[in-house]
Image (tube, rainbow, N blue to C red; front, side, top):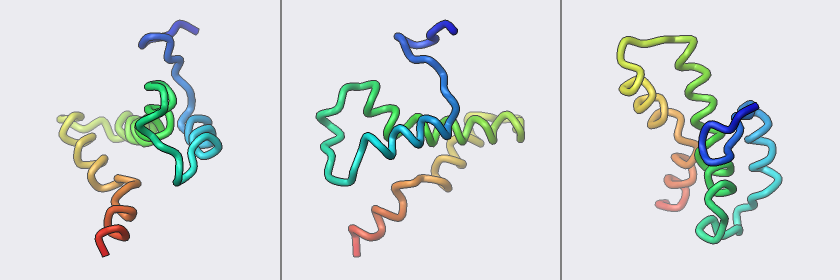
Length: 85
């Protein structure tokens, strides 16, 4: 399998999410992580899930659809509400 972005090999969303759960706890300092680990733990699982749904829906404007999906399914949304209260 060839890397498509600086040594990043595509993996299934479930594998990435499982790995992220093992690597990061709530007290981990995300800013101290290497770029690859940071992305694997924060962005990649959500984007892979979104893109999986995107290819099933195939909307006329995929970027707009993806943006709306990300806002609606932001896993940090509940955390932000809890810290604001």
